[in-house]
Length: 152
Image 1 (tube, rainbow, N blue to C red):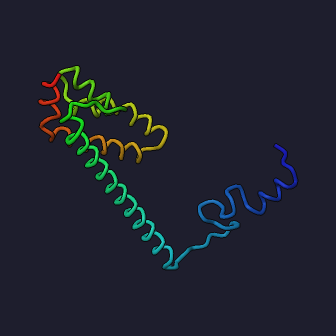
Image 2: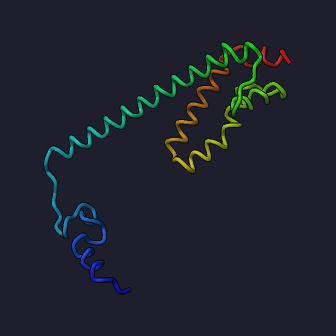
Image 3: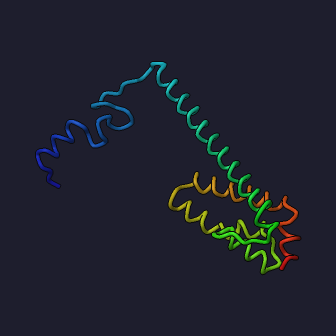
């Protein structure tokens, strides 16, 4: 394959793998980095990632508590049906002998799979944990099965 003069000059200057070259080599010369800055950057990035995941976990827990209180305090006790996927689960729990705690993960499973494919494994794992937390909250709630089914 013939390249233009500009393309050949760019490859000679930058190399085929960008300006740093393959595996951190710059212009064909391997430079060992023995400075302490690399370790600090690595540990600070690990700490930053840990703090981000800690914030994510706190927000997921807040969401579970909020949704659980809404289910327990308002929707189930008033015999209302919510909209969206939770509403579909509540409708299925009302019309079948299967409880809400079983329907929540079953109905949400296709959405977790789509999230895995589109957004990645971390998003799907967080979503699955949030759904599992809401399921556990629905299991702990005495009205989620008994009262909700008897009201029909």
